[in-house]
Length: 269
Figure 1 (tube, rainbow, N blue to C red):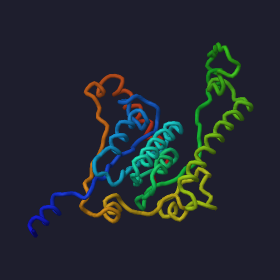
Figure 2: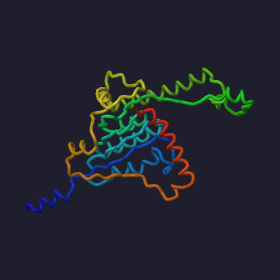
Figure 3: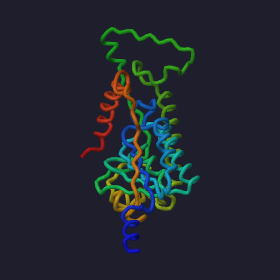
């Protein structure tokens, strides 16, 4: 009996922890186009919640944000399946969980981070350039034909208009409200009365004080405390086809890497 008990303890795991890595810029793209988007992650998320003897789904998040719509779609999918299956979701933040990255983290029931993680940036930003003075000096004539009065709103080759800026800010305000409402619903009284919706970022200790995360800790340590040391970890990763390494996919990957480096540079100390 003792030998049988030893074998069972040694080789029979008490359950499975699914691990999903959400890393990179959150952007609309094809299934093999790179970045984080609902289309590419949907099969992995669905598969994670279908694993046998599943105890929890762990999200490893390292993202500076990106598309609000994709952030919302992914988070909604995770929450929907978590509630349907009755399976808890725990997020673990690495370098950055900011803006849309924090939106994803809030799809989890609990959020943990490394002590050096950057958390927050609950806001909306739109950036661009203005080239109208440059093309005027170069003698370039801008020709744009539209069938709608506002179709060329915020054209970078035309001077800014106050009414166009006001319309953009109205859109940003609406998306910001959606972001705030989502965080408030997910973090409930943990963030009550805290000034966290300014777009500011914090290191993990202050993020914990503000209620943005539940603690400082790493995946193996937290999971062992909650579910024991004999659980099985199952990593789910996107598979890229052979031809995705060539042609347009590889070019997209190069530009995506450049874009990621620019955005991540905001959070590097």
